[in-house]
Image (tube, rainbow, N blue to C red):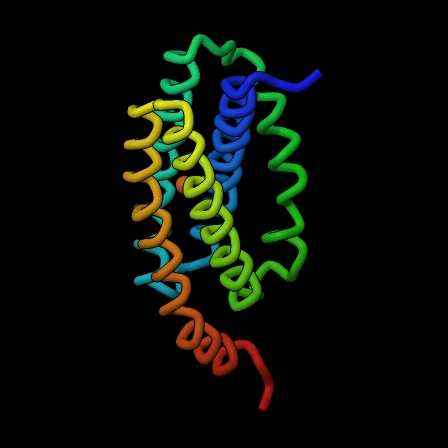
Length: 164
Ligand SMILES: [Fe+2]
């Protein structure tokens, strides 16, 4: 049987919740390895805070929509497990590869909220729409730092970790 339109949106919100938990986990792992990259580290610390607040806003949206939030943890565990190789599948200090993956992950988040924005418009969910409109620039800001920092981080990595 087909889901109702609202069921679809609630399922996507639960996915977004898991996505933000995974973002925070991935950022915390990267922050711990980023002492040599201070600008990057500061930006990631800021975005980890942003992501925690986004997760809470998503929980609020779910509650307002009358959704049971007690099973959120299960979905989170599943998604986080799937994401594990994205960041931890390479050697611990391979910062260029971590950043390429993190940049892709931010693009994925932007896409998720662009899609959710369309859903919110379709269902007339104005609070959800404004949430998406606020979240997208926040993800874009983090994606831009990854984009901007990738060449310099890779150069520094080569100078300090590779043999001539
Ligand atoms: Fe996010």
